[in-house]
Image (tube, rainbow, N blue to C red; front, side, top):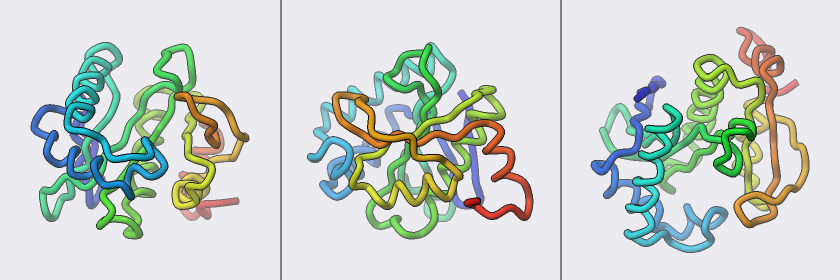
Length: 182
């Protein structure tokens, strides 16, 4: 399984050792505000780890726990998966952070790393991201990445804002000296 890293984060594929950190983050109502809309139960966290491990086994990618380099603490999680968990659909990236790590640039750092992995390692022609229509913080991360808002669509049982980034746009935005938005 692939381990990724940035200057401040180590991305470790979900395993049982991440339960305590994931449960602490996912039971925070503020973290879940635009996701489940309620705190995640310990049973849901265990089930999610098992689902993610099965996807890793089947696809070779999935969700990572974000481990902060300086502290060794689990401070977030992110994924490369497929929209609707169907392999025929485009790749999707997603992320979440502990509330005490919001506003530090970690979401943008993680999103760039996830997109790079999808484009460079998985040869994805297109990467998508979903957000609750009211989640303006995630919208800003998506815009900094160079993603284009496509519109509202129905995924995972909810009306969500879909953003996408083509490989060509990624290469333009990733070029040295280019602004993060056109």
